[in-house]
Length: 156
Image 1 (cartoon, rainbow, N blue to C red):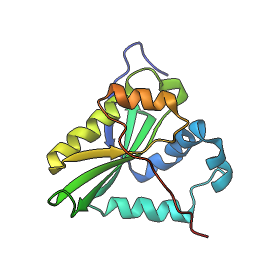
Image 2 (image 1 turned 120 degrees about the vertical axis):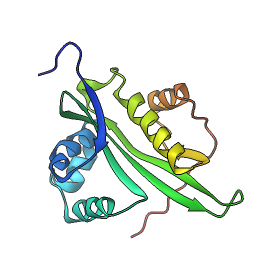
Image 3 (image 1 turned 60 degrees about the vertical axis):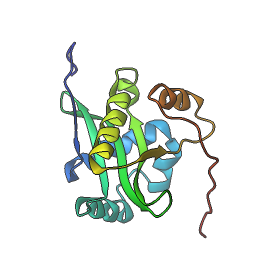
Image 4 (image 1 turned 60 degrees about the horizontal axis):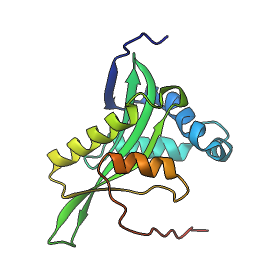
């Protein structure tokens, strides 16, 4: 149950958070639930374990009164371009429908930017599906600029 002034906390995800994280994906993309049959797959578990032991890949959760309501993946990528640098890549920003409009997404992204600053990153980047215009406006309000076209190659 939410209070009138819920306490927002951002922390690293732990094993017990996984069942709470999956529904956040499904709220935004129901096809993801079909893809994994609503279960934590072995591949998801392996990726989570990789994150637990990595100094460059992190999965964070946002909680309101200790209830997981948001998630964000942050990865640090070394680059040879631009005289050598570390870039931060934000991925998988998902906020529970019930928590949207309460500043959770902005707090998560700002947290990721601060983590990136501490890591010495020169650029924080993310991608967003071109049809998600509301998300684009959200990222632009946070200071992100549209800069590239994205391409994907699907492995068969």
